[in-house]
Length: 60
Image 1 (cartoon, one colour):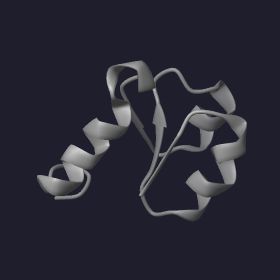
Image 2 (tube, rainbow, N blue to C red):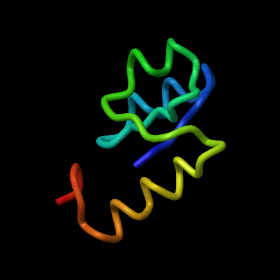
Image 3 (cartoon, rainbow, N blue to C red):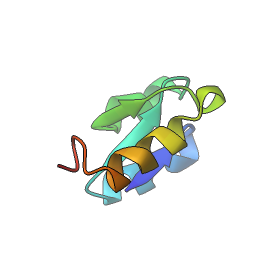
Image 4 (spheres, helix red, strand yellow):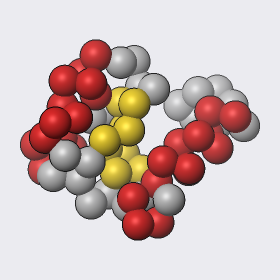
């Protein structure tokens, strides 16, 4: 699992099975991330962690 918002996160997102871009990420990252979450100003990373811990999609 990886969560990113900027160009320096692109390779990391490509390398993992579950790559998330936050809603306010740069367009280049959103183009390669298979999943998205809410903005990092709205605790997007925390939302992804909750999905993992609660075994919700896409981690179900």
